[in-house]
Length: 195
Image (cartoon, rainbow, N blue to C red; front, side, top):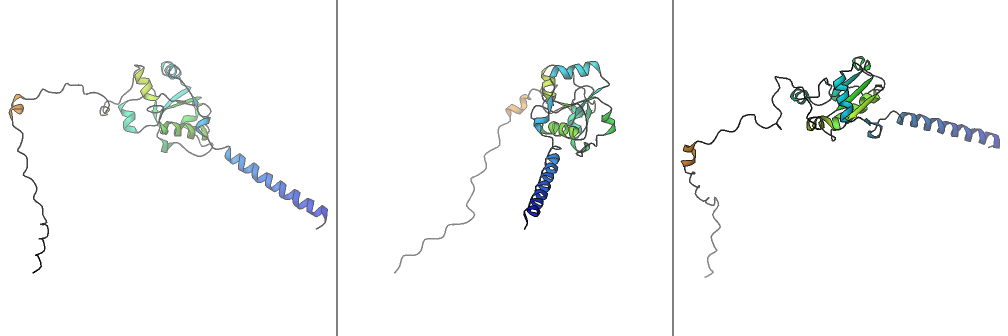
């Protein structure tokens, strides 16, 4: 093969390889990871709630039951399945907000992190995660909105004291112990001695 033809083939393959690498790297750039998430503090979330800002929206991705049992005032319930995973496909109802703040139960909330990343990928400009979540909000003694028809959360103590046991119940003796179990299979008889 002449030197010029070899140079052209080599150059073409090199160009093709660089183009493939650039395409691959640009596709990797679409992936949002936990490292891309920015966080807000309790005071930031408190300010949003107090201002009742039309520019910011709190998002609670927990189940509808958990949301009904208690959520930060002004938050909307937006489960993971309702958030697009496609690039630049942000729900128009959310696009009107300049800032979106997502929270879950606590810092370990995987669903809050997943919704935050999906919103970032779908084109929301300013998405932040309040990692302290509802547990941090409650621990700070702040108000929680509840659906009046929702059952009380399982972690709440009972509102009425337990009734004292009846004195008659204490006088009743315990039931007798059951008889010991008899083996259902008899062991084989010993062989007879040889004659």
